Length: 180
Image (cartoon, rainbow, N blue to C red; front, side, top):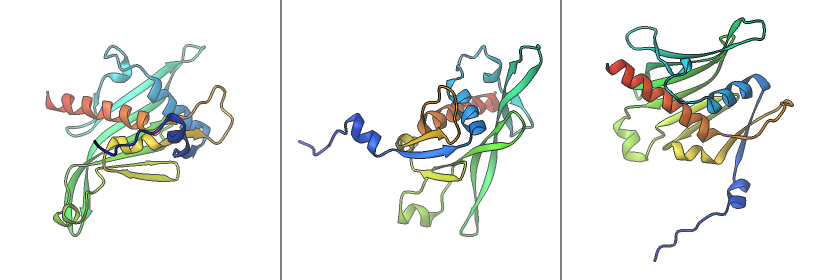
């Protein structure tokens, strides 16, 4: 028999780490997390910026019938330098409707021999607000929630894992899109 312990929901809540963000960042994160993943919606259709870069954009229509950008997600390859070696990766950048970067998720594709020999390195790193959180697996983000610092009507904590999972959804769409 194994010694696996099952944590109750209240024990999990006690272990949660809170990431406080301003109202604008919270609103964009919530919009992304709560946006439908149905392929029919315009924000789920990839837009080629160039051969290697893809973006997704969500607009909303104001009462005066003017369309404004809510958010934009840009996915592009990056080079990561470690131990004088250039390694490949991908960055998923999140911008608000005004073009301000509010978060980025780095996904590493390669690691140095030293990194692999010494430990299991972080494959993911998300930067949001003043926090940078590395993770070996997306499941590591289950212990974080995003909350607004400011008063936001009907605000509720948003699991960081839900935000990262949605960014991964767009990452996988971009891979399929670039492969076609």
